[in-house]
Length: 243
Image (tube, rainbow, N blue to C red; front, side, top):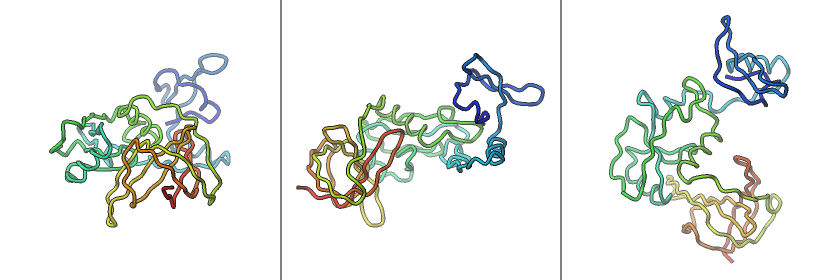
C-alpha cells in the first residue's frame, strides 16, 4: 500500500481508514496534517506507469508469511550467539533449520528445534514485526536491519567509504569484524566482513581461509566492486593474500 508520489516523503500520521468506499491516510505535510488517498500497490504501479516513471519490481512482492514459514502460528525463530557456532549447529541439525540472507539461520514455526546449545539464544520473530500488509513482508533492507538490531543491538555507526578503484590492487591492515559460513557441494565457504583503522568496511568470500572473528591480518587484495547496503559503503575484494 502507498500514497501518491507527491506525498511519499511525508510522514504518515495514524492508520489508513476507509471513507466513502475509498482508503485514505493522513500525512504530515509542511502546512499541517493532510488527508490523502491510500492506494494499493497495483494502483500505485499503474499511476507511476501512466506518469512515465520506471516501476521497479519489488523482490518482496510474494506471500512472505507462507514462503518463510511464519504460517498459521505467525512466527519463526532466529538465533543469537556466535555466528560460527550457530552455523555449525544448523549444519548438524538441518532438519529443523533454514537459511537465507534476510534472517540468517532460522526455524519455521512448523518445525521443532532440537539439540540447541545453551550458548545459543532462540528469539521468536513474529509476522507482525516484519509485515508490510496482508501476507507481504517489508523490504529486505528494512527487515535485515530490524533483525540485526534484535540479534546484536543497535547498528554501530561506520564512516566507511569506497577503497581503491575496480580491478586495482590495495594493501590494508584489517580486523575480521563478522563471519558467516555456508556449506556448499564444493566445501565450506566463509563470508567475511572486515574493517580497517579508518572504519572502512570490506567484504570477502573464500573457501581457502578460516579466520576467527577479531583476528588481525594484513592483506593484499584486488577490488572486485563497490556496493552499498543500508546506507553503508562496502568494498568487495577477492584474490586476497596475507603479507
